[in-house]
Every structure is written in C-alpha cells, then in structure tokens.
Length: 183
Image 1 (tube, rainbow, N blue to C red):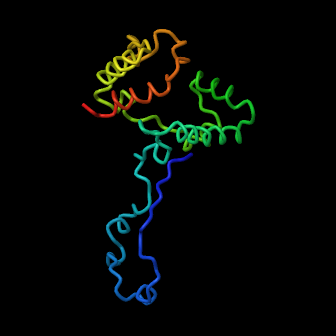
Image 2: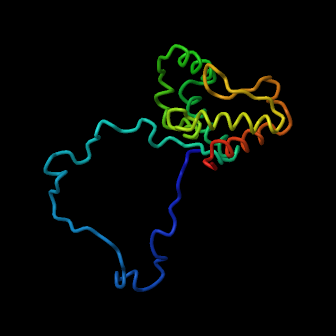
Image 3: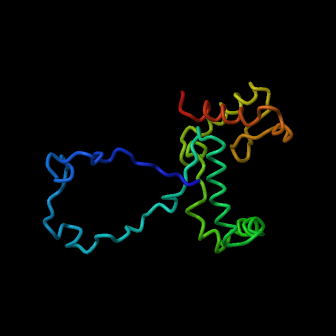
C-alpha cells in the first residue's frame, strides 16, 4: 500500500444556496499580478536539482501495523513482478549484489517502502543509544539479542529466536520503546 493522505473537510458541503452563488465564501487568495520573480527569471516550474530521490515513496512508521507494512511491500513487489516476471527476486538479489541498477528497480523505486527514519543511523543521531535500548528491551522479553560490533545494528544471538512465540510483538514493542523518542 502506498502511503496516501486523505484530505477531508477541505471545503463546505455545498448544500447551501450561498455556496452556489459564491456569496458568503471566505476564501483566501493571492492577487494575480502576472510575471512574478520566478516568471521573470525563467525558473518557474524547473527542478532545482536537489530533489529528494526518496520523495513520494511510502514511509513505514515505527507504529505501522504489520498489515500496513505488508500492503506497502506487496505494492512494490507487484510492480517488480510486472516488470521482471516470476524471477524478479533473483534479478533483484543479483543486481543489488553487483551494485548495478536494473530496469524494474528504476521503474518501481517510487513504490519501495522506506524504513522508519529512526532506524537509519544516518538520520537518527541517537541511533547507538537507541540500539542499546532495543537490545535491553528484547533481552528483557527473553529474546537474546546483542549489538553487532561491526555494523552497530542489533541482532539475535540465536537465529531460532525469530520463531519464539511473540517475537514479532516483542520487536514492534521494543522498537517503539527504544527508538520512539520516549526518552
């Protein structure tokens, strides 16, 4: 599912006679004087060259439900299937290992979900502290975890812990607690 904001209440109901005639409307507007600074400089509508390549991509939040996350990823995967067919996963793995882009990745980039910014060490100045808090929380829930000394990310001491009852709930709860800004 792509992240979509629905805007409601952006106007009256249109059921009164005043709305049909325009009487009684309180609408803010700017006067049109033609040829503003952007028009005179020729820069109107031109990209600045500093556009965010991730703009418009669906954004996973720390408190996103698993259902919402699954919908976001399904939209991306559906796009990849449309462009690469049934072997899209293998093509993606090979391309990402080689560091070379492939057609479906370029075509579907705008649908690939972004992870919560709190989980990105480049965007979260408290990432190391938050990661230690994540490990402490997971260990407190009986899921043996540690901070990886090479990557700085948290991980499981034993991979089979992922099969532990309540693992997904523990991860979600601990991520919100550790990375959610409740400091």
